[in-house]
Length: 118
Image 1 (cartoon, rainbow, N blue to C red):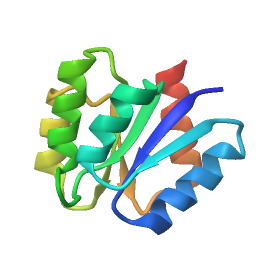
Image 2 (cartoon, one colour; image 1 turned 30 degrees about the vertical axis):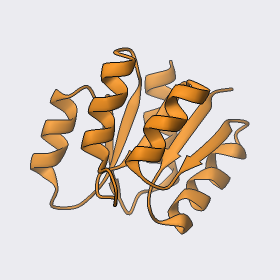
Image 3 (tube, helix red, strand yellow; image 1 turned 180 degrees about the vertical axis):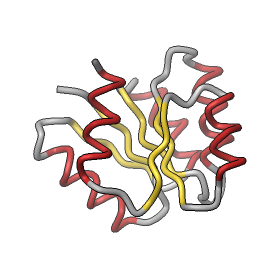
Image 4 (cartoon, one colour; image 1 turned 135 degrees about the vertical axis):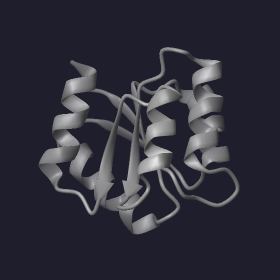
C-alpha cells in the first residue's frame, strides 16, 4: 500500500483520516502544519499528501509550492472548507492533483486517493 502524509492543524481530523486509511493498509505519517509537512516530505518521500489549506506557521498553499519545488512529481490532495474556491483554484494551478471539501465522506477520500495512486 501507499505511504501517505496527512497534514492538518486539527489533531482530531488527522486521527480520523489516519484510522480511515491505515485500516486499508496504508502507512500514515502526520504533520500539524505546512512547515512540518515540508520537513516530513523531504525525510519520508510519501506517495501522497493530504493537506489542509488553512494552518498556522505555514499554510497549505505555501507548503504545496515548497513541496512541488522540491519534488515536481509530488502528488498532493488539498483539504478545504466550503467557501475557499479561490484558494482551491490557486492550489490546482500550483500543482495540487485534487481537493476534498470538509466535512467529507470516507468514500470521497478513498476515491480521490485511488484515482491519484492508480
